[in-house]
Image 1 (cartoon, rainbow, N blue to C red):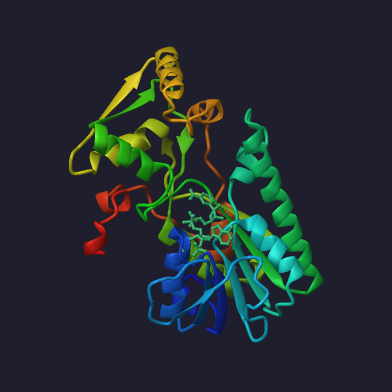
Image 2 (cartoon, rainbow, N blue to C red):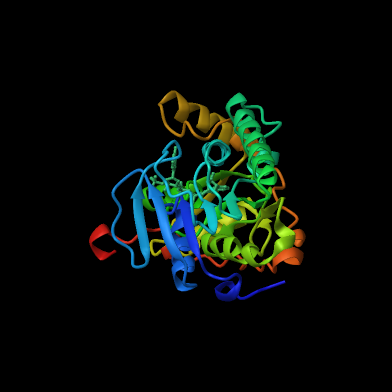
Length: 301
Ligand SMILES: NC(=O)c1ccc[n+]([C@@H]2O[C@H](COP(=O)([O-])OP(=O)(O)OC[C@H]3O[C@@H](n4cnc5c(N)ncnc54)[C@H](OP(=O)(O)O)[C@@H]3O)[C@@H](O)[C@H]2O)c1
């Protein structure tokens, strides 16, 4: 087992999908620091990044480098990547792709769209592992749970933005289901670590953070680190539901559906022991800092 991400595997040529995303950006930095030659596929023009060749394209592109690539990384939609990989002629001996714990968490959701997400993730993992095995390629899937740290996630950053705007954030009193938020850097490091560990081939790993805490405590810490110190209010669950119904009727908070509400009470903690054992995964505890949730103004970036 190898712990130093910068010596986790001999550097070579990497092809990266989703390199502009919150996990992907950290992965590009890791790869460059470790001496890899990096080609990152993107659908839009991107600011130059030392050591990274941005190539315009997407997961239906046929003009991507397929020869001489040592590792392919996917930090974008897994279903699109699995389809691209199965159809491509790429000869890279190593594939590392990011999936999601939603593959399990959402499979029995009350929302058909969520069940569909779980089903697409499951199918994508199957296609990816089967096509990799057929080519004798070592593929590993990393399944993060709730991701934070880059001030662009759709959970804690969205909560922080709303709380900063209004001065408070409201949760139902029973929102105490367990959470295991995982920092983007720990995920990018995991993608490097698995490279040097052949035992990870053909496996999918749940990747939570280094601390399990209640939903309300996670939100409390997030709000407490913000400069304006928004307040966390708790409402009895029936009152919260009523308020949410009114918000929906007014066209607001549409993303907070019945399934999301139900999950706030559910324990979403994952066994990260296989990842610790197989590649030395050692994620940080949830220590909230404002920069993890509030992006700097564009001209300060
Ligand atoms: N955020 C979470 O809480 C969370 C939790 C569990 C799992 N995940 C999974 O982890 C992966 C990475 O997450 P992330 O939050 O870092 O993602 P992200 O910030 O949303 O970025 C994903 C990147 O993928 C590329 N992409 C998106 N849609 C695409 C498409 N249809 N075709 C080709 N490229 C596309 C985009 O790059 P360009 O715009 O440059 O093309 C985008 O920057 C995703 O698979 C996500 O499902 C995320």
